[in-house]
Image (cartoon, rainbow, N blue to C red; front, side):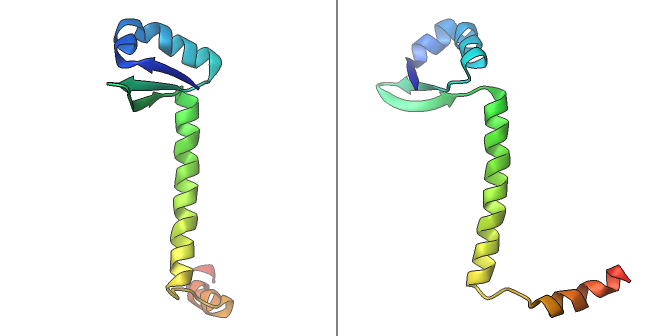
Length: 85
């Protein structure tokens, strides 16, 4: 992964964005020698957001199972029968 200074981002933002769009490789931006941000192309960002949403749903489900908030198949079928009939 490429690393650039925040001052480089200020001076060459258009060029860096073009590089990201072409290469699909994130760029770490540092400030005062420390990581401050990542620059990523929009497609990568949106894909990561969709994946995070799915993972959050899985985590909620696992938490519900661990806390005992579950129903047996027959219970669910009975509850849903109102809408399915």
